[in-house]
Length: 65
Image (tube, rainbow, N blue to C red; front, side):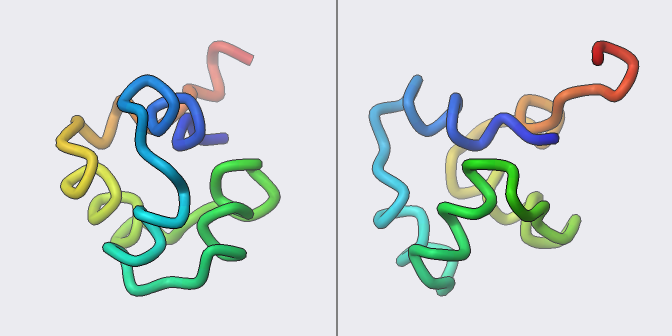
């Protein structure tokens, strides 16, 4: 699972803005944010770079579940 939605909310950033920066559709970013689909590692790293966070901040550890 990921924390993309939480990080976007913390930073006051809209999913549509992230979609434009990633070069992906809004629907794809929305699927990531709602954990319906998990981004590939390369995409997750790009999201972390765009949001200026450590990639670890976007991931929920399986050990915490």
